[in-house]
Image (cartoon, rainbow, N blue to C red; front, side, top):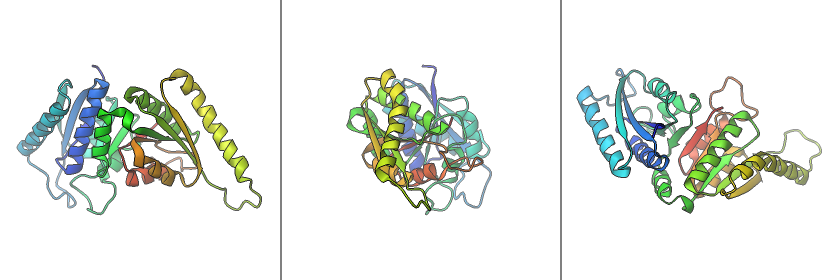
Length: 281
């Protein structure tokens, strides 16, 4: 049990759901679980920054809940000081996975994603799982009955999507879950002559080529190809309705090189119906 999963908590409902998800994931993967809380300096958008003794109780309660969900999991806690996203990124570099809620106590209540989840997703060379609020219970429950729901991954042939595919195949094999591979394409703008049937066939062949080595390596995994003419984010969000986990690359093709998080991964993080794993090459 050398692998470690790090989960961040601030005591919010979203963070509590993230701890639950991470505890079950650690039990499934036989990993250690480290629960971290970061005490930050007072800011105008943080309505409550607990004193150290309150933060210690917060961590103790999170650890107790995690041990109830995964009695065999080795659980440790870390109390840090600084900026939450910065400290969690540092912890993640020595972990196998980082788990956070989609929104914590700070920020605007109407925001779809919080500053911490945006500050870590795609910014570390480790998978970052963002546990969405409406689907946290669905995702956690499905981990206990892995075959009941599928894993969804988006591919476009970019380096990050190849890393996402590798992670998704590994997760599907571990959870004994079917894997739906989504390739969404769009008609190029300002094209005078276009053959949609030929384009669909070309995209289907691209997906088949991407999957060929993984089918050989993991014959136990059931693969489904989902090649559609649609916006990638919309296609992945729709597929997430029946999923236990959606996996996306940090950035795909056509994204600005300087962007940490692409528009597709950002859209999925904001609207998916289940937890989202962001993977970076």
